[in-house]
Image (tube, rainbow, N blue to C red; front, side):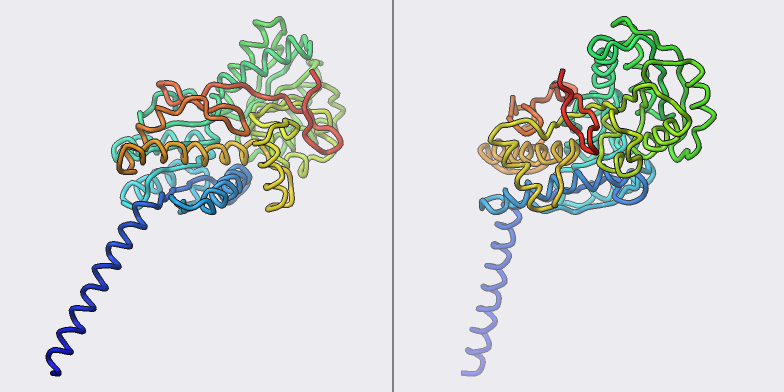
Length: 376
């Protein structure tokens, strides 16, 4: 009698373990796990933190719908390519990770691409625009325009729309700053403006007085600052303090609320560009804006909006892959190539053969301490 009870108990335990294994497998099949990597600390954390907000908002909505669920494993690459390589290998080696999202710095993404390519782990980035990433891997995609395209559009705007005749270019000395400055300068000159001077600075520079004095002597109509918000804020504040009256133009890398917080009135009137405008009206943008304000108590910026759209782009790819069978790294990657014109808050998303997105940008002006659309 005792032996029968023991055997029966053991069989029940085995049956229970087997059923739990099946349930765990079923849950895994219905879960997509994202490796999110970006600079989440330090001077340039705003890019990664804002992208994370956009992803969290979207995945909260998607997870409430039932069916496939999404979870995030976040890793701080600190904007360091060496750290990016280690994280890429870590994500590659983790069989639970289905896709990588995020990336604040093109240099970090470029360093990670060979590893990601080797393990065939798809990437959907939202804040890296280096032209060198175009076609870098069949597993790498991004849902923003390249730096070259954005810089060229700003150059054309400066010359044609704003009517500036003499422009000075001051950019950060890295792949982002160099690429943006070159594209801007070529487009501005092709549209009739003269680039009367170009200078560069290193990330982390705090004193720009010597460069500003040189810029003032050249008397430009406008100064294009090809860099991130931390240095752009210092350039604006120091420039206005030294009597620089030229109009200020900036990049998507400066399109963060932190720019206004750091520079205050010095950036009033500055024109920048990005892929999202809070004044746009549609059911999708209204829903996003309302939900974002309710969750975070502030307006979203372009990085939050791009990440938000990236989440729904991933969900669309999951649906495509699931309709054909198993959802895994390879089927997800193939599914991204089938997405055509998926509507989002930053416009429709499609990817070309190089993994780049086509689209347009918006020009925004700082007025009354807020980003508002340029009227023309």
